[in-house]
Length: 262
Length: 257
Image 1 (cartoon, one colour):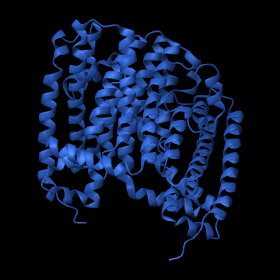
Image 2 (image 1 turned 180 degrees about the horizontal axis):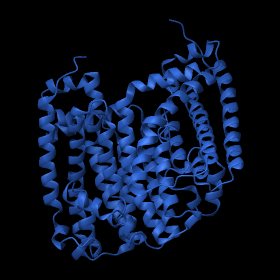
Image 3 (image 1 turned 90 degrees about the vertical axis):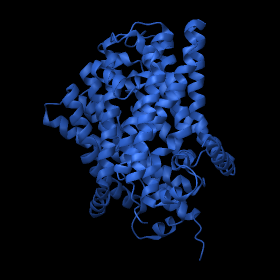
Image 4 (image 1 turned 45 degrees about the horizontal axis):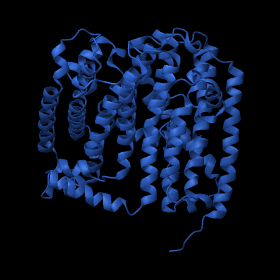
């Protein structure tokens, strides 16, 4: 599966390399649009020293780590949200009869360098935040773990959003509320949001494990909502469970899929 | 008027998509509202808003996404430039710009009903939004929204016609998206911007799409001055659009076949 993915990604990359100018503008554009979020955080901290108990460097750390997870999973799997388009035009049928996983084909469809723009932006922010925070290794080891778990969690959310489109072919934007909404939610410390919302994203859709719970460990902070300390290490478990649910949903979606016939 | 009606009806074919958009706008509205609440709890009365004003601003800006088409696009024109159908549009006896404007206003009115009301109602139920008491404010707010739609159209029309000169308009579109999101007040209320950035943002046309109508609604700005500002930008951009249309007519070469 990984080999198929890499092969197809390479093919798409070579195809998009035919238009280098367009490629560069799109990468820069995606970098700049996402830089707006950072500009917004900066404007907020022009007015206040701390937001919901967190300082600028800490917010940047939470933003950068979640942003990196989101950008990488968007780059690798984000195209699944175009499923409804493929169903409507009938191109999804072509994918199903090819001897490769339909999910891999969907995910890699139109893979392009422009998608590195967002990743680069998040990595820069994370790098700056880390240089400001000066974390000891006894806590910093969690950072790569949380980024990888975050990728799995967001990829599962993308897959769930894709599976949802088997049902809601006419309304693909509903999935955006969860995928891009999840990306936006994790940009700020969860202490900004209300307690019910935070419990929801901890125990129902485990977005809190992308950067919030492990982030509390890295930053060595009290949980403002008083949830158990052990949750800080539960990110891999949450990622695995969500991935299993997503795989199940995707398969169920494919099983009940009926072609539009066009 | 009739063309606007057709635009309204054409878009009403996509009811599910509009409702899905409304759902997404609502979710984002809730997330952004919490961030603004956290900021205003740290700094009460910042920029002349209280918490209720800030939350209202947030949901109004989410509501404007559909009608003002803040994420760009919405016009079929740019696709028609790429396919060459624009040539037919340019030789029609009706003004291309006015025709597109009517069509776009029809679209905006439809989205106002389906994509703007739901997020605002949910926002009011969850957070309690500010509602102006005086009916005069509502009248001015409606006028301000209408002018905002015209400014938004005039801007997107220019962007769409730019495809006559630059072959691939995705670069200009993404630049336009950037300016619109940041300088309209979508990302953060413009009155939070510090110093010269704030005054610059307030003078640019994009503020007419979100910040000015929201301020008229909240009663934070002198109404006549606000409407004058929007009308001036609408007139300027429409005039520029008319000039560009004339230039495009000379520029486009119809290939036979």
